[in-house]
Image 1 (cartoon, one colour):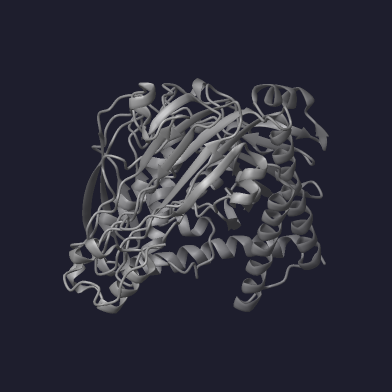
Image 2 (cartoon, helix red, strand yellow):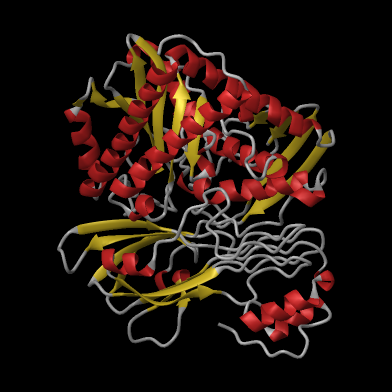
Length: 578
């Protein structure tokens, strides 16, 4: 069918569902065919459709931290090379933080979709590749001082050209990644997703007509912009300011500052980070698109939390950002940024919500744990003799809200990733899990308490494993809101074989930070224990529902001693901590 159809609102809704179903099928392909647990268990990726100019049409967004990069990466490539750079069968990969990307592990792949001679769209996939080289296994050096220590940096280059392998590029990539087999498998999972996106989009255009589908995508973008602007208009105009301290940059021990002014003016929102600290020496900087993702995340939280508005580039148009180059929210070359994506961005969301709490106090949350609690490790597996590497994260507490308690054991709000089941974890890696659970009293007290954090203890079962870590919120706890109390901070400890007590890593190994270090070697029988941060409480603890408090004590979420912080206490029922 080549004749253009005039779609009414029902037809547009059908087209939107078709686009999102394509993106969802692409995501299923990635999940089912990938090699690394960060994809097939953690779901640290997103799959998308974009128009010929790089505007987002539809997504299966498992990871909101990628929102800013998704349209910018393709648009940047188009601006740098022009549309003539692309030919049928090409696939381009790109992970350059200074060209519209997140941090180095995040790789965007894009495939042009041609109908006849015309470039009409792109299928895209962006995901955190578990091992991309650099100075540390897992490619997460918390003491990196430039991007070259963080891994292999790829400007937009063709992995596939005219449907054929660009063999020399593959040779460079696989020679620089410590786990090339996993990279090969994960890259092909992404390529498979792109191929599915291309086929499904082409079939849709064949069914309804190219002009109908392309024009419908633009109308959906315009519709989403109109809907979000209508939501923003209902927010009170004004200038709302907030600032926070971040405990260190991974290299030094001094804190740095992030400041924001959120301006709501009619149907637009502007986030101005002027006055924030200059970019730091360590990897806690973030790129422009990472800061952009944070403001998108915060605005969607207060305007459309149930995602009723189709998520496409139209949603982004009412939101603008001012992020001075060379600051911690807009790193410039050669500054490192691997930790800014995982551990500064969620705190930027918290900061923006704190500012917006002055405008819409009933629509925000207290601070989340705000750290992905990144634990990286690698070595030779004693059973297979093969080298392995893994990027591991775990759940923390979310902040309480006006409506309910914060979620327990949730991976940071900017990622929404899943944890890896213990059975899968122990099958793949030589670490025995001795303990895994939620931490009593880790959520800040409040009318609605903060979510509980997690704790895990593991024993090394290989001759040796090399560990790196980037945990935050160990010295500056997640903050409560409107009288709510702070959540419990993070903790990272080690017990050497034959010793009786767990101690901090700086005490045992002399590293600069107890929770941020690179390439510490643990041996068989050593144990590592960590605690992620809890969420801040929302509202006066004395106003908590006594029945809810009693249930918390019975479930072991709140101890009887800590229940006294809530005023009335839990009542006569005894608590049985789990």
